[in-house]
Structures are given as structure tokens and as C-alpha cells.
Amino acid sequence: MPLHNEGGPAAAPAAPDPAAEPDVLEQLMFPPASLDPYPLYERLRAEHPVYRSRFGAYLVSRYDDVAHVLKHHELFPGVPEEEMARMFPQGVGHQAYEVLVTSLVGSNPPKHTRLRGLVGSEFTARRVGGLRGGIEELADRLVDGLAERLRSGETVDLHRAVSVPMPLHVMSDLLGVPHAERERLAVLVPAMMNVVDPAARPEAVAAADAAFHELGAFFDELVAQRRRAPADDLISALVSVHDGDADRLGPGELRTLLFTLWSAGFETTATGIDNAVVALTREPGHRRWLAAGEKEALAFVDETLRHDPSVQVAPGIRVAAEDVELSGTKIPAGSHVRLMLGAASRDPEVYPEPDRFDPARTGTVPLSFGSGIHYCLGAGLSRLEMSVLLPRLHRALPGLVAAGPPGRRRSVPLRDFESLMVRLEK
Ligand code: HEM
Image 1 (cartoon, rainbow, N blue to C red):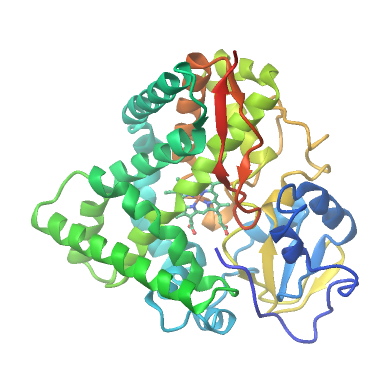
Image 2: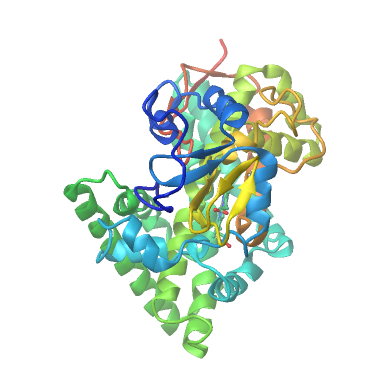
């Protein structure tokens, strides 16, 4: 997911006091804010709710403003493709770049409506509910494996043993990616992201190209196989649409969709699982939510995603279609707008005592999955995965404790994990 390196009208006001301290986006990339961004978000919401970053975008941090932007797509459409090329010149000409900037979240109606319509039906509540049996079996298998290792006295990295394999296998089953290839292909996605990292060195961009070619070659071969012998999976369904009507899914678009679906759901869901385990091990009192029933387990999941959202900055870069005012700050037409979901989710105006983890909260819907036309396609799927897995984890391992501080990887745009070491209480 890209950060900015250019954009917005030159005449727009600069961030307050830019020389006094590093830009907010820079601060978020280094300690202490990379380890705990919430104190910085608190200041941002209170002092500069619409902050003009030196990287070009306006950062919007109050819940009501973020919700307003998400819900008014006509006022804040996605950045046009040609402008993305200006923002990420290092990516232009690289195929990995094309895939990343022409993804679903970066596209506008009518293209977005057409593409979303093709895959949306696969992610309805009914279709996702049909995956429950397979998800339960997978969760049992992963929890059994973890329990065996922990009971033998081992300290285990839960991130690698459970949090990543869970969404990896669910998404692979849905798409139809064979078992033997899954782990190899999963690591290619982060490498592809280098192509929209303004700070990427030429070697990193070359690595993005290599990852793109490997994943692309794999998908091309799988598409050819499914064309010869269709199976009951999403790739076969998309191949049949593509071959039947190129106006609905054109050449190139099939590949981009496969890349998008393959990449969108792992780290986000894995981070949700990791954060839930952190909440459980920090405050064992929360465990009762996982012992009570399905509704309570979902409340626990939703509070995890509100309290520490996996996606801290919405991946879709918006542009103001006209002059607008948010929280008293004018955003001139043509400016880029980034939505600070992590800040919005702790806004005390809508969540009393926002830093407290409390699954009993009711009322305002969290924006952890976005809202409006780009609302997360996989929200139902990831909530199901988490709500199936976490009660099983708690039942099998009530004595699970942290074996050290969580190994955080980044804070923006994803607040994800490198590792999460756990052990059983002696
Ligand atoms: C806990 C897990 C997840 C979180 C927190 C999350 C978060 C988000 C957010 C915040 C957006 C909106 C982006 C924006 O408006 O700029 C989004 C969009 C999206 N998500 Fe997720 N996501 C998760 C899991 C998944 C999964 C499992 C999939 C796999 C299908 C997925 C696929 C997508 C897609 C395709 C979009 C773009 C939708 C569109 O533009 O119409 N996500 N997600």
C-alpha cells in the first residue's frame, strides 16, 4: 500500500509548523510512533484533524470526517490512473506497478462497479457462510498443532503457526490455489509492494518485478489449467466470465483481480488474529467473551479490529473533486486525501474511553473495514475466520501467555506483526 511522494495543489497551506517536528507520516514509520501510534493520533485529532502532510496529502483523522469521505465517493473519488504515475514515477513501466494501481480499491465507477459485481457475489453472507465447515476444520487442525507443540514445553511463534496459515489456506481454497504452492506464493506479495514505495532502491524494484513474474506465471498456468478442466473454485468462475464476455472482464483485468484477491486477505486477517491474542494475553478477563457464544465472539473480534485496526491508513487514495471543508479546514479541489482509520477508531467523540478494550461497546460502527463503495470485500470472511478460530484457541489453550513483547513490523499503512511468541503458563 503506497504512501505519497507528491500531489495536491502547490498553493495549499502547509502542515502547521512543519520545521518543528518531522512529518506525521515520517513519525509513524519510526519509534516511538511505529510501536504505538495512538498518542500521536490523539494529538492529530485534537490539534490538526485535517493535517497537510509534506508528502502531499491531507491526513484526515476524526471519525466523522473519515466516515464522510468514505461515504461520499462522488466528492472524493480515487486518484486517476495517470496521476498515480506522477506520484510513483519509480513504478511506471513495471508490470507490478500496473497491477497495484489498477486494483479494485484504486478504481472508480463505472469500472469499479463492473469489477466489484463480478466478485461480490462470491463474498455474500450466504457464500461465506458456506465456507464455515472448511474453516472450522482448518482452525481445529491449526489449534491442535499449536497445542501439541506448546504442551511439549516449546515456545511457539503463533503468528507463523496459526495467524498467517489460517487466512492463507482459506483464500487459497476459495481461489483454487494448490497446497504445494501456497507458502511460496504468499511471500511474493510484500515484494511486489516495493514498486509503490517512494523510498525503494533499484534492487527492491527489481525484486518486485521478479515477484510479479513468478506470481503472474503461476496464475497464467492455473488459468490455462482451469480453462481446460474447470473446477468448483473462484478462478474457474472468473475464467468462464472472461472467456464468455471480455466486456465484463477484459484481458489483464482477470490477472489483476487474481493478484488483488490473493494479496488483500493474508496480512490483514493475520494481524487481526495476532491483535486478538495480544488482547487476550494482556487481560485474561476478556477470555469470557470467547467462552460465551458466537455473538460474544464476534463482539470480541469487532472490538479487536476497532481497538487496533490492521489497516491504519486506508489504501485507497482519494482526491477532492471540489473545494471542501472538514473540521474547519479547507481542502482545495484536486488535493489528495488519506484516511487515518487507526486514529478514527480511537476518536473519543464516538467511543468513550477509546483506549479501553471493551467488547461490550454498542453503537457506532467501526470503520476498520472502510465504508461506502470500497467497503472491504472480505469483511465477512475475515470476521468468520477470526470468530471460528479464537474460541477454539481459548478452549484448547486457556493457559496461553505471551513469551515476550509482540514483534511488530510496521505501523503504517498496515500495523502488522513479525512474530508473536507464546507459551503455556507453568
Ligand atoms: C481483518 C481483515 C481485513 C481488514 C482489516 C481489511 C480492511 C479493508 C479496508 C479498510 C478496506 C477499504 C479500503 C479503502 O476504502 O481505501 C478494504 C478493502 C478491500 N478488502 Fe479488505 N480487509 C480485511 C480482509 C480482507 C480479505 C480477507 C479480503 C479478501 C477477499 C479483502 C479484500 C478487500 C478488497 C478486494 C478490497 C477493495 C474493495 C473495493 O475497492 O471495492 N480484505 N479492506
